[in-house]
Image (cartoon, rainbow, N blue to C red):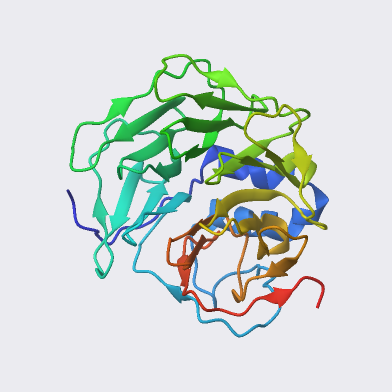
Length: 317
């Protein structure tokens, strides 16, 4: 495994990530301006940038940046031990930052081309969506030999999740569908989500309910295990929700990309609140640890950690 090295980021960005920012429409003009600066000039310092992104409203935040040096963050996950995993589609690598360490290491995936969504199962195996190669890879715990899952016909996969039985779920962004590969089968099935438009991520809770970020429809929907009818969740005012995470209590977390915020839906209620992250710019990924710590990656390729015990702000206040 390689230790992290300083590098000069390339000016190119992930094709899917750019497409997502473009698809959000007129409401994303500020974010698109930031993208244009990056594409034309590469990364600049805050004093050099000709376009300043619109930050979130000022708020007290205990979030701290983790010691990653990333080019194009496209996936984020944390395991039960507090190890943090990040996929960098700009360098075609997956990084691990072990709990208590300040030195990320590269995991031994090979042949990646724009790695995206990440998930960890109950045996600490790590899964990565290899977006441009249209495949899903698994790296068993303690192994350096990746395994390709028998998923076929993927058009533009990104989000991934694994339930307690080891069933793997994948969002196909371009195919507008959510697929499930049972742990005891080599045959994937399409879940009965209806009317999806550019779904980008998913989450699975302990009751095997599947949640989908239906980004193009600005909604989050859930499909309870054994049912065929998805239900819209009570989020309002979303502008391209694109990443989901769920904790052991059933609280659901959503990155609201073009509103530069992270929302929490309290389990068993219609209560939506805003997490106290400051100055987010297009938050792209969210993950939650078993201890309740929240991790967010944004367009500046920062990975931020908000320790458990934070205070949320009621939505609209």
